Amino acid sequence: MASLERLNRHSRQLMLLQVGQIGIGILSQLILLARWSPHPETDLFLIVSGIPWLVSAALLISGLEMVLPAACHRTDDTDNFLNLLLAITLIIALAASFISGGIIFMLAQQADLPTVTSLGMGALLGFQILPTALTWLGRGVLVAREQLSAARMTLFIGSLVTAMGYVLLEGRPALMLSAVTCGAAVIAAGWAWRWCSGLRFNFNRSLLRQFSPDLKILGRAMAGISVAAGLVHLQLLVERGAILALGTGYVAAFNVAGRGYEALMALAVSGFVMPAYPHWAKNADARRLLGWSFKRVVGLGTLLSLAAALFALLMLTLLENRWTAGRQTAQAILILLPRFWLLTSLQPLILKYFAQGNTWPPVVGSLLGIAIMAGGAVIFLPQAGLWGMAILSTGSVVPGWIVLGWRERGSH
Image (cartoon, rainbow, N blue to C red; front, side, top):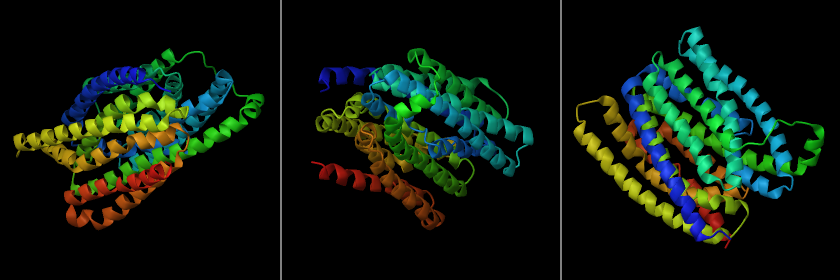
């Protein structure tokens, strides 16, 4: 049983790190707006940057850090299991790098980018999967060991490198933004493995036979969580494709607003969900931990929602007839606000299922949400514009509440 004292200590440490990451993240997005937007290559980068994660999800390596703690607690020979998993992860990540790089190259060519620029963009965005996969694996090991602050630190470092890259680099957005993304992934991976040492590449048939049952269970969980991760990025592609119809700059504006909300949601998740995660992986005292997490996430999510609304309204007032990108971003903040509150409040349920290896119920909710977004984009967006986007973004979260809420109620 997890002690409240330990949960609260981890909560304070993780929230402190997340506050720093949020500050850096907001700064980097402001730099992105000021230096790199509005620009067609920036919009292209923001659209194709989700492709590597779609490919990673298709090849079942996305979300490895979320399912690994439960797998570590099931196996008796953790070291050899992780050595084998490291080898498998690197092999799959290498394939994913080539596939996603090729797709991005072709899309860049269709957008009339020069061949060299298209190759560079594809190579940089594709290669980032290798270090990112190492980071996922390393974070999963750290979470299983309850080294939660070390796991969060890798994300903090990635955000810091991204902000520095946006400030220091100059050149074509397609190449420079891709280089920043890749560089941040490499440095974050290095820090993850600084804390998570002792693993080595070990791929042989005897280990495959020994851990075949564990790998099958892990594979089923990975399939669910990878599909969930892929659906998130697919929804982003659908949204950004629809937002293009609203005019130049709106993709960047919604990206900045979305990143801001992701940072705020990560604050709630890191402080009030992740401390319970290793214990859910052990199936320990799930109901009490869910209550502890849910009350705090809803309270913090409500406060953050009010703060975001006031900030956006203040921006719209101050920036009237000034700085188009800033006004567009303020509009996007208000449009995405209801979705943020609903999705943040749902996180304890989603991550409880992930921790326990039962990853498919959240997938069903995400799939229904994307169906609402994709179908509604054709119906609402041409006539309703930004109001239609607000309805769609909010409605896309409702199926998740219905599916997971119904299952949780039925389990008690």
